[in-house]
Image: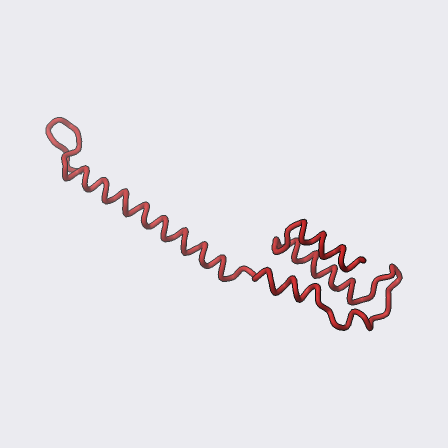
Length: 103
């Protein structure tokens, strides 16, 4: 850097430090926003999986299993568990949908 005779950075040196610092901050912000955008683009949409997991037209015609649940109900519960494990459903949403299926 450019230094004055007093040992402190000169005006040009301070400007160069400020420009370098700004470039680092800008590059970091760009990298972070790019990763966030990529993560959001690949993340599943929560509205569609919930509707697909809870709406099963063949569930009424399936024969009840040993526990009193039909095969469709068991499949829906398993799908809900997968969505909850993946973080798509919160614990409250999972409990609500599970109660609907078991009722």
